[in-house]
Amino acid sequence: MKTIKTTLLFCLVTVFSFASISTKEKDALKALYNSTGGQSWTKTWDLNAPVSNWHGVVIRNDKVVELNLEFNNLTGNLPFEFGDLVNLEKINFFRNNITGSIPSSIGKLKSLRYLNIAFNKLNGELPHTITDLTSLVSLQLYMNSIEGTIPSQIGNLTRLRTLELYNNNLKGSIPASIEKLTNLREFLVSSNNLTGKLPSSISNLKKLKVLSVFDNNLFGIVPSSIGDLTNLEELVLADNAFYGDLPSELASLTNLKVLLLGNNAFKGDLASLQDKFPNIRNFDAQNNNSKGSIATLDTED
Image 1: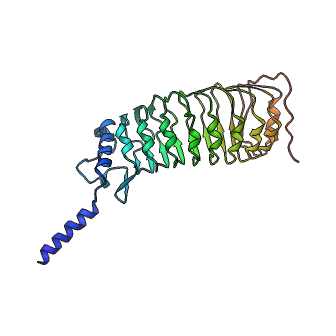
Image 2 (image 1 turned 180 degrees about the vertical axis):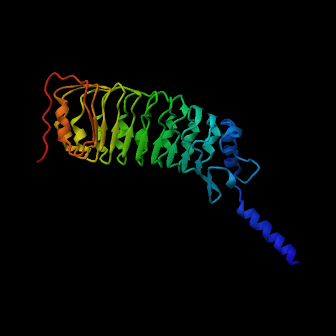
């Protein structure tokens, strides 16, 4: 009798120890495995083993909450079923060979806080449903071949602290709704095909530390409101078509460590700017239009 009870207890412990995630979530994981060449992953999954044993899968309360598959040779497209992993809080697919577009079903991942599919081979346009991910704190999609525009409703992602979209093929202007991202610390959209002006409402991003837009086709004058970004440590405007006088308000950015202005058409003797910023470490203003006068940048003694 004791043996029977022990056996039953062991079975119950086993069942609860490997309590299953939902069938829908497991099917979504299998779809990811099949669509990205799971058998050839660097660290593959044994589909016959408990999901809790699968590399990079984090389960909490019988729900898949993280997928950490960076540097794992994922090759192929993300499946539409990916959106069925509705409890995900973190996705890290950094440095793989994922191709195709991000599926529109990603908008179903309302709990997602961290999304990193950087350094892959994504193409196509960003789905507008990505702006439904209102829990996002970090969005990193740099070093891909993503096309189209930055979604106009990007401002819905009001919790964002990090937005890194550099080294893609994005076009169009910086959306006006960017002004709503008041928690943003890092905004990097360099090396795209962006056009238009740097919006003056960017001054709303008071917590911003890094603003990098170099190597685009942005034009116009730098708005005087940029002086409101007093926490800014890196300002990278190089390799665009900005012109005219730099605003005197720039002198308010006393925390600047990096200021790169080269290959634009700013006026005046920009070399003297370097002395206006006490913490500057990296400065470049070469190949600008030296004709005309530079606005006086007043600094406090």
